[in-house]
Each structure stands twice: as structure tokens, then as C-alpha cells.
Amino acid sequence: VGSIRVDYASQTLTASGYDKPNPDKAKTLLASAGYSPSNPLKLDVISITGYTDWDASLAVVKQQLKPIGIDLTVVDLAQQTFNSRLFTGNYDLAYYAMPNSGPTPYYEMRQLLHSKNTAPLGKNANSNYERYRNPEVDKLLDDYATADATTQVSIIKQISAAWIKDVPMIPTT
Image 1 (tube, rainbow, N blue to C red):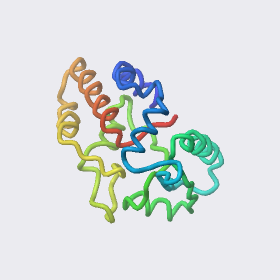
Image 2: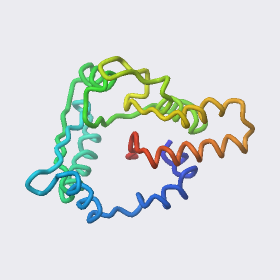
Image 3: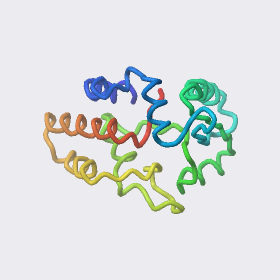
């Protein structure tokens, strides 16, 4: 999943600057929002108890965010509690895996990004748990099925660009 997505979006990713982290800029942005070393941005990230590889990954993320002024607390939950909170949008951040659902990025993008797969906070979403809504992305996803192969590649690149710009989720692996 990640390698396919990166192949389609590598130029957009490079243009965004996300491939070259800038801690000073991050600190400046946080300061402009009222955060400081004495008043860090505090976020909880929900995860599933017992997934030690996820815990290890989140420990690295937490370590990387602390110097820029983000205090991340990992909240390990039982699977049923995690699912309930994820599906209803009851979290700051969520760390989870999506199964591969098709031979091209379109299938995952449709599940993750189409607004028809989401719901208001407090209601169960089908698969767009981040509650991402972008009418332009919805139209691109709707147009994909009837497009020729060249247009499909263009559509995936446009959706990737929107994903990078809007950041509804951050693939970590």
C-alpha cells in the first residue's frame, strides 16, 4: 500500500516538503497557535493493547514530537473499546491498520477518503473514520470507475495531492 501510494505521489510529496521535516517551522506554527514548551499541544493517540510493534512505533513518534512541543499520550485500549472509539470518532489521533482492499490505490482511497463512508461524530463511520470530506475528491473517486487507464492514473495523482495537502491521515508504514 505505502509503496504504491508513494509511487503515485512522490513528486507531490517532494513538492510539499513533508519529505524534509522542519522542526523550527513546526515550533513556529505551534507558537502561533498559542503553544510553547511550558504549554505543549497535548494529544492522545488510541491504539490496541498488546500490539507491541505498534507500541514501539508510537514510542518513536512520541519521541520525535516532544522536541517540537507536542506531548503525545498513548492510550492502549481493548479491541472492542478501540473499535467503538475509532468508528464513532471519539479520539484525537488513532493508530491502526487498514487491510489492502484492491489491486490499485483507488480501492483504499475510496474507503478512506470518500465522504459517503463517513458519519457525524458520535455515529459509526463505515471506513472514513477521520471524517474527511472533500467534494472534489469525492468526484474524482466517483469518476475513476468509468475512466480510461491514463485518466485513472491522473485521478490517483490528484487524490494523492489532495491527501498530502489536507492530511486527513498519515500513513506510517
